[in-house]
Length: 85
Image 1: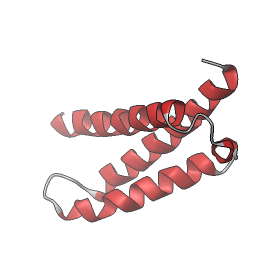
Image 2: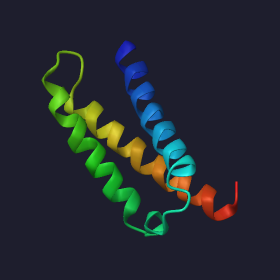
Image 3: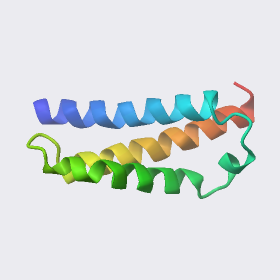
């Protein structure tokens, strides 16, 4: 049960961090609107957190969930910029 809560927290954390970063910091960057940017952001986030898998609590699955959350958060932030929110 605790593992599931950790997975949800990591995914939601990656999503919220990426969405807020895109909406607040990358608002005027035209390159963020490219279709492959969310995929690239997710892969980079997963690769950056991958060395943390050496710690006892963090697994490679958590790193992947963080990358997926980051990719979806980036996508959501770009959609919010397009709609004007």
